[in-house]
Amino acid sequence: MPADELFRSRLENQIDLRHPLARLSQRMPWTALEQALSSRLPATQAGGGRPALPVRLIAGLLYLKHAYDLSDEAVCERWLENPYWQFFTGEVVFQTRLPCDASSLTRWRQRLGEAGMEELLAHTINAAHAMQAMDARGCRG
Image 1 (cartoon, rainbow, N blue to C red):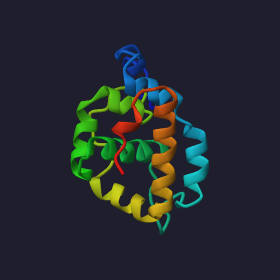
Image 2 (image 1 turned 120 degrees about the horizontal axis):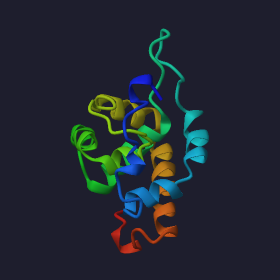
Image 3 (image 1 turned 135 degrees about the vertical axis):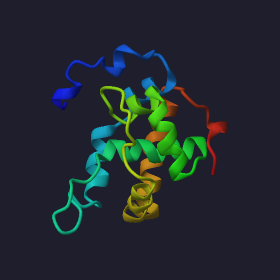
């Protein structure tokens, strides 16, 4: 955690941990997802650029985009306003800047391909079903 965030209140102390997204975030197989998806993604941008965004952030944003049927731009904007979404994607304290630009989600989807996206959504939906956060009728084909 950066030094400027050391004295900020943690999200887990600000939100209701019984909220469905907070519960789902605690049930998600984040480590397994990171292992499965990181092998398909570069550690840094070509040419030694900045480090890649955390897998949990991108996986969480892509799930939220799918679950709420939002555009890349809209999911990033709503993330900025929603502490539950930030907690779900692994943030520790409330953020006031966008986590990434919308084009990052497009690039990640392209790198993951259809199989990677299906794997990501399957992990998330399975975790949600396991905790009964959503019923089978809520799933879209």
